[in-house]
Length: 468
Image 1: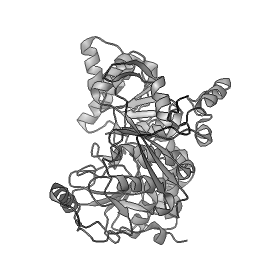
Image 2: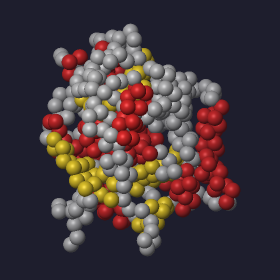
Image 3: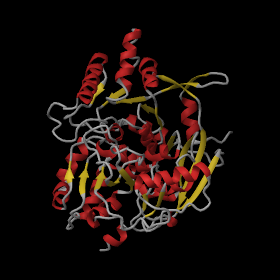
Image 4: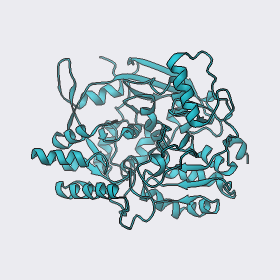
């Protein structure tokens, strides 16, 4: 019997038709939509006189450009307001479930899906957003799509898609103090580059991955796209089942037992062959931070920015351009660099565990005077828990501002922008030029490192700031 990977098992089970020397007609179990990439897709359906094939398989929420203050009031920005209004109108017209601003389960699309138990092992999941790979943490094939493909899924519940190559990244061993899942994935991307997994779907394996909580696994899978991968996934296990049990949309009673029995079969067979494999030791990983303008430009927080030694031609030119944008020099230490903003949030690190970890470490401390500190929960549920657990009080006493759910300062599509020339240490997923605002300078790090930077006012090693 042929040995197959987890990716193969899920993919092959969802192929409706294979086109010779072409893409597969691929069935989609769940389709998430938001206010930015869906309006044009719905408009085109209307122009063509086509309805939505299966509204019950689509779930909507506004997240990208919604304000994170005064969400009970009219959205001031005209374009943002129009996009949210179109989302409401389209969901009402086609009978699509909408978790709107102010509702109990509003939030970032990749936070509320798992939170509600909509995301489940073995599913195929798409959204007009590249970080759909987040859902792969549950043993699902999840990836981002474009607006024309959003239209295709709405109309047919299928997509035309070529099967990706397969990569396995194994991280074994035990991570040291102060090392989080964000550090694991930033380390991996730094090792293989921001294009190192282009054309592949990645399965993460190994004891260091298995030891992660579901929320930490989501952080890892979320950033798969940042090394060029089509998506990333982790085989479901008892941690997955425990997380999902009792959630609103998870199976109940006998259906739960049947589901778990099936989910337990979703794993790569021993001896299955991948197109490419990488192995890393968790003990080699330390708290990480980026210094350039793509997520692959990462180093240990106590390390030095690489020199141009060995670089030639366009590689050297683009490298120096990146450092010039950031205001850094080749070979210099990044530790001790002054910072202006810190941001904890996004679909990468806006979950309750992230906010708990920040609150735990900043308790009894005060942020530095030069720091503006924003904490943005990934959902209304996360916000509620942060209040109930007393985290908000701790954070506010430390000088942090808790805002309302949304993508916020992850990207410059809303009011939460980092001013030009200012430095931000962020738990988000991208540090491209202008990602957090025109001229903004972004360094990616874990919530723990962000907490330490907020207290110190400069780039620092969290293990030194939080020694006790």
